[in-house]
Amino acid sequence: MITVKKLVKRFGMKTVLRGVDLEVQPGEFVALLGPNGAGKTTFLRILASLSRPSLGEVRVAGYRLPGEAAAVRANLGVVSHLPLLYGDLTAEENLRFYGRMYNISNIEFRISEVLEMVGLENRRRDLVRTFSRGMQQRLAIGRAVIHDPEVMLFDEPYTGLDQDASSMLDEVLRSVAAQGRTVVMTSHDLARAEDLATRFDILSRGIITASVTRNNLKKTSLPAFYKQALAN
Amino acid sequence: MNDRPLTINQTLSIVRRPSPNFLKATFAVVWKDLAAEFRSRELFSAMLVFSLLVILIFNFALELDIKTRQSVTSGVLWVTFAFAGTLGLNRSMSVEKDRGCLDGLLLAPVDRAAIYFGKVISNLVFMLIVEAIVLPVYSFLYNINLFQPGLLLVVLLGSIGYVTVGTLLASMAVQTRTRDVLLPILLFPVAVPVLIASVKASGGFLTSADFASEIMPWINLLIVYDVIFTAIAFMVFDYVVEE
Image (tube, rainbow over all chains, first blue to last red):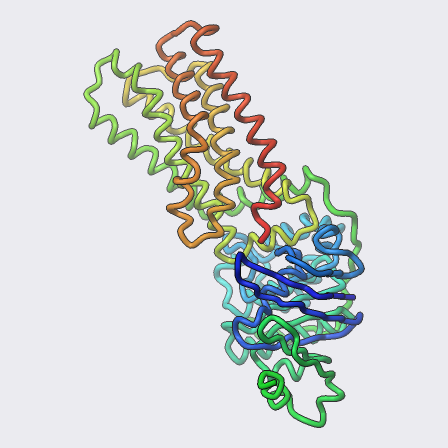
């Protein structure tokens, strides 16, 4: 579903990604872990077609980036630590706007479905700026799945959430993944990543230094694996 | 926080259609901007209050006899529109950047030029509404008739040119930390032709100058500027917003 070969990204003289290779199979939930500055967000922005690769090959859902970016975007849902929502619009107005941008048919029915999925149908007519951080993040997930994407990208989705909100987000993420979507998530929260993902890749200094599936991880804990991968 | 239990493993009923056409995406952006602004009125009220203050200050600062009024009016008007327009452009793009909404727009499977033209149309609507209020207030304060069809045409063409290039540069400036300062520094040099042409053409109408020899060349310049910068923005917007 996602194929990345020898991906390099430079900003001026600074090289952030130094030849990343990654293959994600359909239905896989990959947690991309690494320290600050490792290039996780840059990598996800390239997959999301928000940033151009300097070198290398990137394919998402069978389409090549950046040449077929519009087709990639039609199959992609992105959630970051920012909500990507308009505070002066209500929850349903936000979803209606994004629904129009994705040309979704039967849009009012879809809005109701998505709001029910993220547990916000009772707040559908409230302005998003009155929402708590956790509610905004759930609505952000609703926005990201409104067009039923095959691939979901989550960039630090737990940033700024308290324990209750994080637990609720766990539920929403599980429901998103349970529908057979391919998911790539960056996170610093190893416990949550271990709970959700089926594979763990460590990105450090611009390359993927280690990768392990959940089944193989059973011999050791994720924090120990992470620590060892960074030490190498 | 809403404590209602989440419904898990729901199957969403999706009927996907091809990517929206250019016009549909453009007007979705316009609808979103107008709906948000008519609710908050942040951008509009800032532009309007600023404009009214500027023409009031000029009213007190300049000793104006009837003849002087006619010669300075076009300059005062366009200084007011340009500064108020910059406020509006900055605010319009800041709203997109603050909550990451610009990324949300850029993630949509539409031609990115549609996003640009949506922003241009909504910015133009805000600017024209402010101008529609400022012109009668100016007419009242300075006792001068500004409601001449030719002058209104110049206001429209000048505003289109200013907003066209302003929206493009605002989408560049908004990526930087110094966006509030950077936009006028980038915009005013590029907008000089449209401002000079607007001031000259407006002044021509107010002083009843010869249309063919003194006004028409400036209107032609405005039309050419509008067309060229619309074409340039159409071609480069995708590169401006992508990292």
